[in-house]
Amino acid sequence: MAVIAVTKESFAGETRVAATPDSIKKLLAAGFSVVVESGAGAGASIPDSDYTDAGATVEKTGKAALAKADILFKVRGPGAAEIALLKPGTLVVAMLNPYQDKVTLDGLAKAKATAFAMEFIPRITRAQVMDVLSSQANLAGYRAVIEAAYAFGKGFPMMMTAAGTVAAAKTFIMGVGVAGLQAIATARRLGGVVTATDVRPATKEQVESLGAKFLAVEDEEFKNAQTAGGYAKEMSKEYQAKQAELVSTHIAKQDIVITTALIPGRPAPRLVTAAQVASMRPGSVIIDLAIEQGGNVEGAKLGEIVETRNGVKIVGYPNLAGRIAADASNLYSRNLVAFATLLVTKEGAFAPDYADEILAAALVTKDGAVVHRT
Image (cartoon, rainbow, N blue to C red; front, side, top):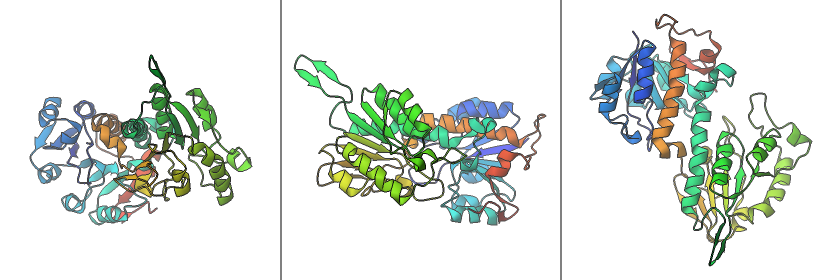
């Protein structure tokens, strides 16, 4: 019986955990045993007793948990100290940030760990339930609107009172992926007047189906601005200039702007310039969801709220999904349960099929080498 270890996250500010009591029950039913480091679930409000009640073994230290482990489940990649505790051949499954965190990949290879990056799960039908990027981005999009509402000094919906009418917040979503769509839906539920933009033509119908208005330069480049995998292509400087001109006037009228544009393996594209920020009214709020990859907004700072001279707040909080850690952990752990089923046979024997297209796509280190160098 393969043993899965779940340890505390060492990444600064990470509140999520890679297993919940519900996911542990499913892992046990699939033929695994689970050992959890004491306190691993604290950030997601999961006490050790809940893990024990679900059937897991709780160990006082990560060292003790890893000593029994064939597989390590993490949210973020393990740090150097934890990698040093891994047995050779241990399977590590986590969001490894493979495009940027080369040090962790090299460390895992040196430790002869077999590592899978959950970000590399292919976008195919049978892998949808394992798609951590979608599950976490969905929650991040929701939380972005909540953070905006908190930072904004006015209400979201139009309210008619005896003393007069309160105008609805004008909200502009830039980038209509999973996070952007959830941001649109949440802002609409709160009563905002919502517009959105994206370089992918397929998103126009999605935006309008949620009751928002779509804004984009719809030229030939726009019509071909989506990869086969569903990601946005990086647009030409000429298109970016036209789009910037179109949205500049629009941004100046907005109360809230939320930017969500990311391109895997590349710095986040710049969507909002300092001049556009300066055109906004005092009290306006910008939420930069791409801050961990450099940010979409000029002047945004990682982990900070920057208040500009003209009174605009630029919020650069990282890991917004981690700000609702209980739900984020619940969804992430379900992604891992689905992935774990690929590591065993139908009879429950631990035998990963590395020829499986999902495992092959996610595999980044094996037999002492980095096998998927980005």
